[in-house]
Image (cartoon, rainbow, N blue to C red; front, side, top):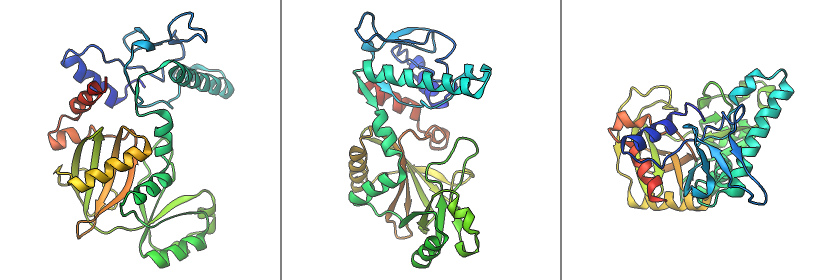
Length: 303
């Protein structure tokens, strides 16, 4: 999408290195201009419009980084009604996805199907456990009594959204006394309840294919994202951990993934989750690691 920081940073790295074969397709700017074309009988090549205004034939594309797809169209803000706005957003999104699915024959990083499937936090937890990771004891429920009983068995527990929503970040929170919370707060929608994993060492593991770049974030906070003014350093990924991570990503069908792991006080890695297209650029200045260039290297290696 337009103004996506990660896409722009990798595009800048490509321009700086005079690699002219990198293009950005702004999925929120399909509406309002001639952005794509496709014919069922190949009367003309399928094309998508790049941010530079180039009608790029999909048959010439070797690798497609499936970065962000679900944004609403910029032009839809001028629609006269909610119905028109939904029509523009849905048809632009559907047309782009359909054209890519029908005409792109190269390598996805990662495929839409794998990306959507792997984004399911429950499914990825099950896969990680099957591949030998310790994962937190987890409950998804809308019953206060279920959560009260889970807390009795698991000890201190935390809560986080199953999927979440656009807008302000929803940080992971403690649930110290679920019996004191009204029943309606549980029944309104399911949530993920997990055992609290003790420890202050959080690992942010960026996997670009088989290449792994990890950060150690040291904080006593449950969720490290609100405050990055804590010790953050490069972290060597042990071989056995790298093997298990690669096995999980293969099972999920992902060619890249941004993974959160927590180390217990005795150093045991606990799998928390993988984001198929997570944020990694914020670590560049903190680690002194040129991650945009590293990711560009990975994309080039897949051509």
